[in-house]
Image (cartoon, rainbow over all chains, first blue to last red; front, side, top):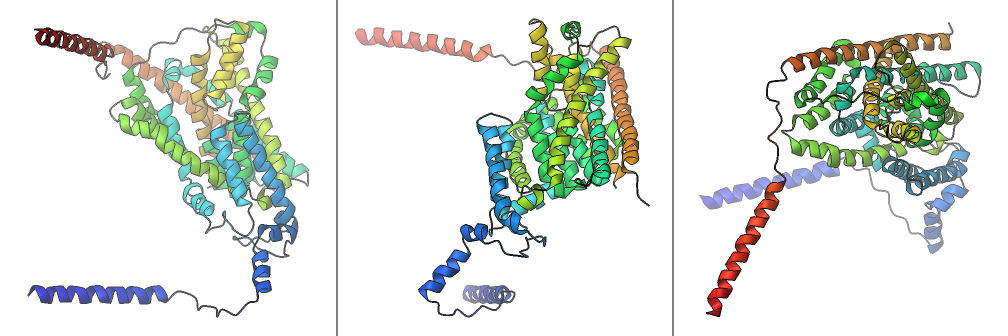
Length: 436
Length: 81
């Protein structure tokens, strides 16, 4: 009996393997007959597949994996220029220490994307696969937001909720830039931005990398590389861009303003906060719920205190893994044919404007609020209303200390800083809802 | 018909800024109400996990050192005899 069973199983296995063989063999293309080649032919054939040949002899009408025709310039000089752009990113990240966590992977992704023949950023290349999986689907920015939620303490905001308005005012930079981009494309012939493009460019002013990538991947995928690079570069340059604007817009007395001590926030309040904010978002703007929802989830996991392991993973392992993939796949959009166009120059320029207007609007809002309230607000913390957590808050603190070394503004600045994250997510939601 | 892009942009700005402010104002309002409610129930014990005792391990260590020391002394006395 056992023998018969064994025999039957063997037959079954054999038939499965035979079937598998036929299935595998079926879709493969008919093999090209190998012809005898002389040693000269072999070497010539090999030379044709080298990068040297690709750079020296760009072919006419060569198409990239997505069917766009590549000009001769992008195939040779364009790629070489992009190599140097990527080297510049390495320099900024390694030598200058500007946002190395992102600029390094972005730069390397850009390097890989510009390699001829290999098509690493194409749909079958590994960068293309990561891009499709994580950015086209909008997944990675949301996971980053989860990590940001798990890393952020909303306590200062809860202690002094009215500083949230500063984070709102700073979003003015987004919309001012949007108008700037539209004006550029309407009144000049160099730039050509559609409404959706302009919205994606404007979000750079929110100083929120994941939000910018999320919105750009939805509204202007072609500009994604330039937008992400501009957003992260300017976030890295916060300590250089913001202080002059802060000093111009405030007087010495205003910079010395001391703020009232923040009250203690109970644990229970911190636990309820993410749920409150999500519910508000559900009622007012469901389009922003992917971003706010991820943020709220991360923050609830952090504050509830019963899932330390999950919170730990979100703050470290998960966000690190996603940062690697996000950086590489954003870099894959730095291919020469997409980046070396006049629009990129416009985006870099507008990004800087966006940032400056956001900073200025936050400061002015603080000055306006001071006119109406008895508890004075130091206008410097208004500049922290652009998200860039926690860099912008640190800059505000540093500027305050310059005037009066006993005036610590850091915790006060964290309020507008984190509300800036919420504000830019809301702005992104509004822009998404318009283009639906 | 050609869309006047800049005018459209201004409309976006009005919608965008008002909704950002509306959302944040609503948030501030809700947070303030929430804080008031929590203040009223402040006497209730917080859901904080029991405070950890960072010194406990060092105390234990001291105890352990003392016990081991005593044991060694005892052993030395015993072997000397």
